[in-house]
Each structure stands twice: as C-alpha cells, then as structure tokens.
Image (cartoon, rainbow, N blue to C red; front, side, top):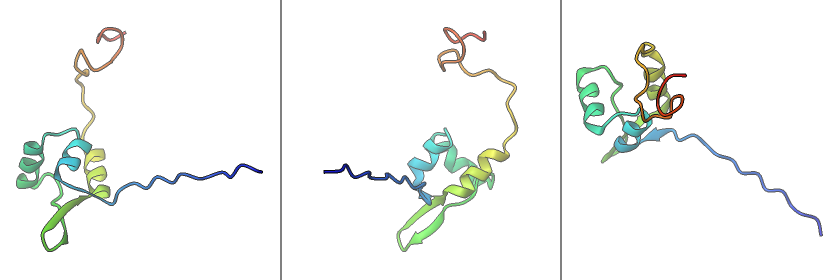
Amino acid sequence: MSKQHQSIIQLKPLYLARAQAASFLSLSESMLDKLVAQGSLPRPRKISAGRSAWLVEELETWGKSLPVSDLLPPANSGYGRAGKAS
C-alpha cells in the first residue's frame, strides 16, 4: 500500500468579528470602537441583516499605514535578554 499525501490548505479569513478585529490589531475592543467613532479606523461591513464585521484587507491596510514607532517594546515582550536591548 502506498501512503497518500494530504494537503492542508489554510485560508486567511475575509472578515473578522469585533473581538477578533481588535485582537488582530493588538487593540482593546474599546480602543477599536473609539478609533472607528473618530473615523481613524475603517468601519465594519454589514455581512447579514444582524451581523457586521471588518474586512481583513482594510484592517491590514490601516495597520500598515501607521508610522513606525521610536519606542522600544515593553520589558516583558521578549525583546533581547530579560527585556533589555542587546
């Protein structure tokens, strides 16, 4: 008998719900809401009568448009040894 190879295909989601969108952007849900209300972050899309979600492509574009930070990551983020720049 020969072994059959199975391919595993992983698809990127098209839409993300509120909690997923916030997590995807490393934001709290309240900050996500605030940025949407300010018009800084794209608004969610209506995907059915009672459901809305964010288009992943728009979230990625928004995230990539942000300026580069001059701040170092927090001490416990795994940056360098024991959180200190090497």
